[in-house]
Length: 286
Image (tube, rainbow, N blue to C red):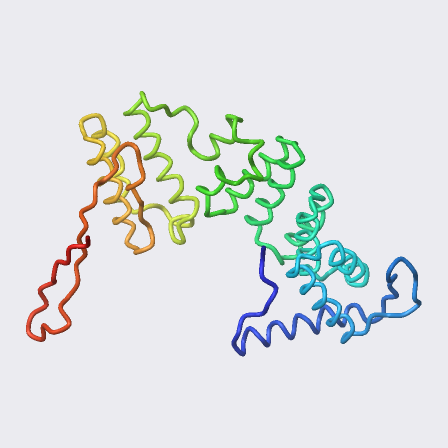
């Protein structure tokens, strides 16, 4: 669940203070209904802040029903405060009120208080738990299009369990049509998936064309797959990622059934006492 505590630091604290002042000021002149009765009062800025903080504490403590009641009051006073919408969505989701959670999650996205990719993902989970596959798949696709990065988590997400057998869900994961027997097609499908993911989520190449050298190497790898061993294909994939020129794009092939690379129990480190030599030491890990 998202955190509702401002980051440390002067700039973050100032931003949070300004946000609180703006949202609280908007609530000053609105009469609100508390605990089901109209008290004929208005929420003053300090009181608004106090109740918003109380709602945060209730959400953190797992007292979601009371938190939802308080958040509904705050939203009636100031519907432009997206943070309250986001907390209300989280509270209703925790209460398994999945249909009721749709509106606050949607509002939080519209107001810019929830990342589009994460918001669409939450909406996909709501509809999946409601057993409504069509909107669930639609929102999941929107989440991926918006750059949701953790694709590998989708298949393990219990909230999306109702979608697992649907071919459209498998296509979104890049797994449709690939069988263990179709080795060449499977590796080429993996290559296509790798390139597509780079274009979708890479910090640079989701906006810019891929490097010409990368494109040439990918084409060469595609043609070479039939004559390469599985381990060689994995190394080719690693080389492709190296051509992107950053230290954050990599693969972890050690848990794969095909192309898994064996590891030796060795680590390399420079000797702390070697003042005249930079020759690394090899340490055997038992």
